[in-house]
Length: 134
Image (tube, rainbow, N blue to C red; front, side, top):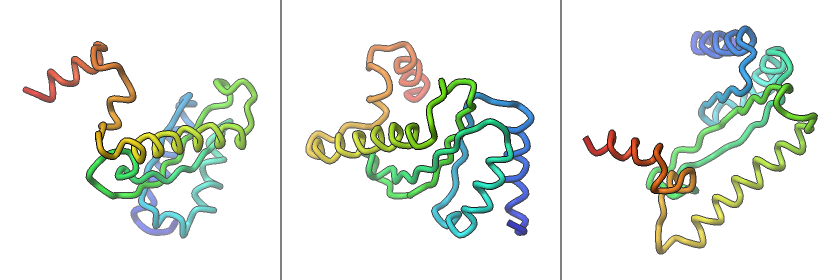
């Protein structure tokens, strides 16, 4: 946590603290595990946040790239209706597991994970396709 690269993390944590954002998502490489206790201690100082740590490999979600990443989901207490961190972790991990299962059972008809977010005919998807194809 004394390395030069850690300055960016502290700046982001300070920004989350100052903004009282309802949701913050931080991302890093799995090697961050060597300083996980320090990371979590600093994130707990950001205010009334529940922090959920999730490791995701895009290859498990239908992409052709395997590049595991660690995500820190910071949810402000004001939007949680009193749910415990354990309950939230369970919900997030269940969703992650369902997504993985979806792609494992449909390997033959490989479906991009993005299509699970919005219906193909929705305005956000249509706008994204238009921008992507130009």
